[in-house]
Length: 325
Image 1 (cartoon, rainbow, N blue to C red):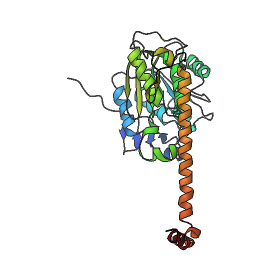
Image 2 (image 1 turned 180 degrees about the vertical axis):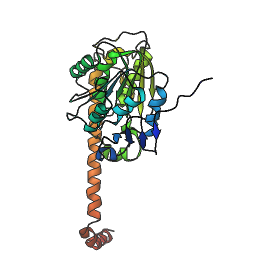
Image 3 (image 1 turned 180 degrees about the horizontal axis):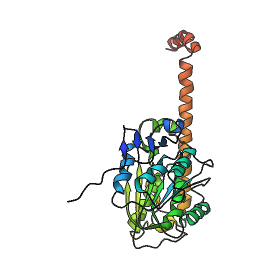
């Protein structure tokens, strides 16, 4: 008979979360950008369902060495610290300025040796990421990586290729909020929140292909609307020069969003995967720009039709149509 371990997280309501050493406000909407973390309550940009997933998924085997990409307002660093009490939790962010409320949490709880936020680090900068991992985590491999950074394809892919070699066999690599370009509602307005940046959609496909090609490198890939969860295989060796496009197999076919590429004509050379990826990205950007232009023109037309001059000239337009008829 197993005994259920009581949760250390105490939800006061659907958003307010009391942890043993800190309080969090979990908001997954525009308020996360306007509200500020305080020493009494830090902002956590995660849904309650996502918080529950982290608590449940690692309840039996809490990760001891964790790397988080994306600090934002410090709430997730505090959440992971409270949930697992890891021996080392390193978090990086492209922002240069530290989060005072997070610094106060670390000071108050005497966690300066175990919780290490590092600012001014671009997740796409391989040299900077390797330097942080080397200086802050040493030679021992990571148990868990959580990418809650910029959520764009190129940067997220670059971070995966850099950090995945440092993950232990059987370790977990989580990519959060990958599907923002496909979520319904306001996420679809005007080309989405980042009309000029592609989402990590293609990366989800590449990771699935890697799992099918190299089970020794990737044992499993779980894709949900909010998460890509990659479990590292137990048999493969991943070097520092790891590159996704060189690791997965495609039976000689070139994959596009539409399916297989057309057969080549005699003497024609197939484009490289990098060239095809860039072509897809360029097409996505052009489509997003076109959608933004259409939306802008639609707004101009709507404004014109609701203007006083349009209403005053309505009789003239009716008369003209009658004369033409």
